[in-house]
Image (cartoon, rainbow, N blue to C red; front, side, top):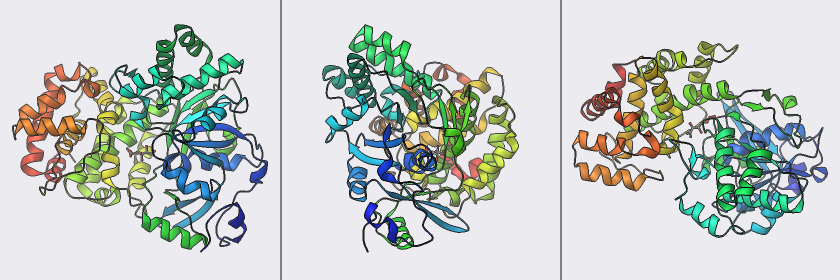
Amino acid sequence: MSRLSNATLGQLTPSTGVPAYQRGQVMPGIVHLGIGAFHRAHQAACLDDLLGEDPAWGIVGVSIRSPATRDALAPQDGLFTLAVRDASGTHCRVIGADLSVLHLEEDRDEVLMHLTSLATRIVTLTVTEKGYCHDPATGQLDESHPGVLHDLANSGNPDTAPGLLVEALHRRREAGVAPFTILSCDNLPANGVTTARIVSRFAQLRDPELGRFVAEHVAFPSTMVDRIVPATTDADRAEISGLIGAEDAWPVVTEPFSQWVIEDRFPSGRPAFEKAGVQMVDDVAPFEEMKLRMLNGPHSSLAYLGYLAGHQTVAETVSIPEMRAFLSAMMTWEIMPTLDVPDMDLFAYREDLLERFLNPALRHRTWQIAMDGSQKLPQRLLGTIRARIAAGASYDRLALGVAAWMTYVAGTDEAGNPIDVRDPLAQRFAEMAASAAGNVETYLDAVLSVQETFGTDLPADKGFRARLLDHLSSLREYGALATLSKLA
Ligand code: CS2
């Protein structure tokens, strides 16, 4: 079987969608940092719809950590298959919007060349929560982060996203080239404002004048992104290569649903996003809060609870009726009252979410969603809990999500199997569990003292601690399913 590439595009099976434009005429206008599966299934698919009309917005993709995506896609001229899956089957379309894929460490000069080019008017990011080198509880740059210290000392050779953005903005300023607009597409709260704070602070630490310049002249619109994109497996690779009739080393698998809401602040210009179904708004905050609290909060909760009880995938976990009832009650009674989204039917949104979680054709692993909880919990569950505390309202189910996370990061599931915990703080949690030696209260107080996640207010809240203690004890004694069933 030949490899997917520009040369073999014409030989694919007739059912495979291909770019509806001449790739050779497309010019790079966007640099994307963090070219993982999510970017390719969401932003790249959206731009692919627009390039026929306006070829000025091709994407240069950059891997910040592993060169694996670059190595898989470079021989394919940046092409990959987007496989949309649901109960009706798998629909394949080849995306051509990523014109080239670079690796920061190995291709640093080329990356910086694109970032400083006049043609690059937007830089988008999906570098995951931890890629911002910030303190998740406060949203401030973590000034003791090893990557930040490295980039401050080696400003011409940055390794982190903030360091790279600031070096590029500095070079553009020196050369008299207008700054690019920075669009964070990660699941951070107020992602534009948060990214602006982090990048401006980094610039200020390098040079106060540069800090002022970034704060005053760089636009950071906020955005809400939504599409469920499980990690690609070898079985996906084999199936999709068979379906398209060419070998694709790194296709992406996703659901039919896709949503993108963007604040319309692009001083250097932008693609006609709205023509691809993007909602352009003045203020993204209500949409973003709705998505983080309604989708991601329950997603993380079900991932920890499901994993602990031995369930591998989201669909498998959510097919348990008590789990569905628990999630629905969590959304209805504890999350929806904290939201205020204009013209939005939250009940319909809730039903759509539960339906999406049930998609039987996506093998979305609970273990994948469980990753990096220390970075995710603040915006997914803890902000909602704070809003409920402020309103004097109950938050039992949300607290169970947090307790399930605490149990998960202690490193053993209900059957006594060790858990491969992936989190920047994994080592600390393992040590806390070991030194608590089975004492639930000692473990709880140790985890609650992690200020990066909980800040200083929640650990001091006696009611919050009491809820967690009840849930932790119940999880240990009766297990996840029995505990959540009481709240379903
Ligand atoms: C998931 C998200 O892995 C996770 O933490 O909750 O990636 C989720 O699938 C997306 O935010 C959906 O838009």
